[in-house]
Length: 125
Image (cartoon, rainbow, N blue to C red; front, side):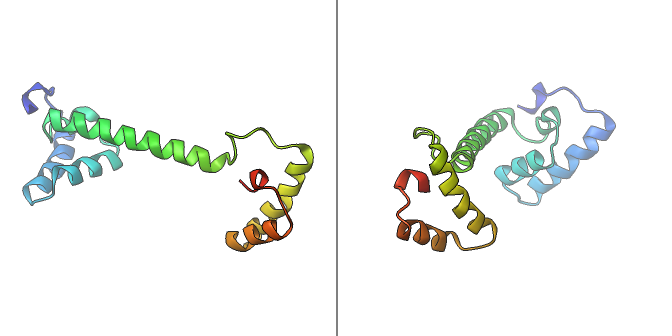
């Protein structure tokens, strides 16, 4: 429980009290934990606000979600990374359509154009 956490300094106590107040006025543990995480509150201060077992679970869950999001983002940033690298001419082909998207053409319209132009599926990734 809270007793395992080392005592806080005066300043740390002020920080912690702000979040304890949130729980007192009815904010859920999840909300308070999320807020502390977003505010980059050091873990030893968080440990003085919420029960250790809850925080442990919350952090594991949050880490897992972040990993999933990073992996998803990685897949968005490196389209087609699971397929063989594109040939020079396929890369060239792609640049033309990437420019259209950069210029603000809706992705749907660009995809349509690639289909009409007969761009192979794996180049469109």
